[in-house]
Length: 83
Image (cartoon, rainbow, N blue to C red; front, side, top):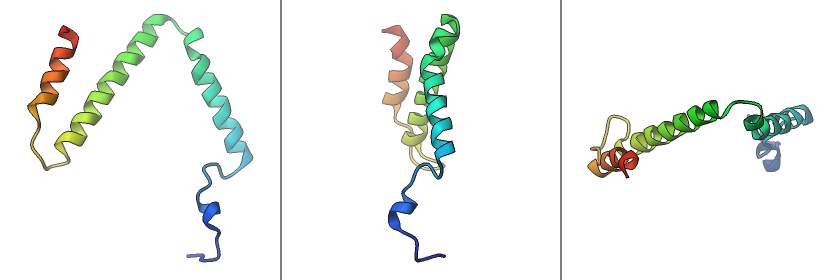
């Protein structure tokens, strides 16, 4: 391990300017993507993101092979579309 490295060098998100430029280009493309694709695909993408958020929340709540599931989380997921 190289102990002569600077702390701020370890905190860098982008290691080079090329990675920064490509990341900015990708973000610009993603922000303008809804103008290129039909609204049905935007709806499907939003629906997938909602299910991902529910799954991640349930995974955090239950834990990995530990903990008991809280029934309120199930009730909120089930009653969401009804309300």
